[in-house]
Image (cartoon, rainbow, N blue to C red; front, side, top):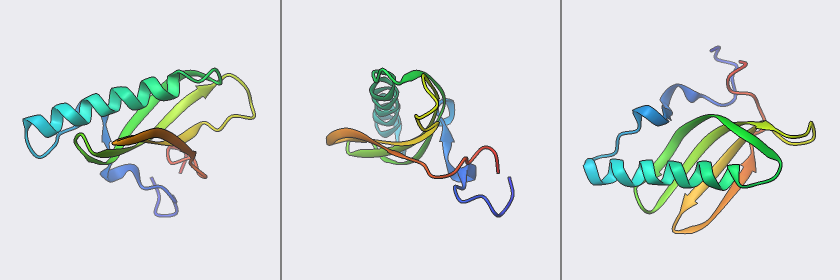
Length: 101
């Protein structure tokens, strides 16, 4: 990855490396990761989730995940921010390809 990359994934955690501040926080963050994956996967325009990284999270409160999907059509963004927690889940298109930098 170069320094020109607008999204720095170097400090994000892939799903298999998620660790919270304690075992309960870790459990809650992993549950939130599943919620985020299920939320994005439930949309008809999402073929499948390819990669998912935890960008920020407080277990059981809020978590932000960077997700790469395989879309079902060309007009759907490939990279999305997914927010879950004590609010309705939502997503925002990521403007740049963090993996292609």
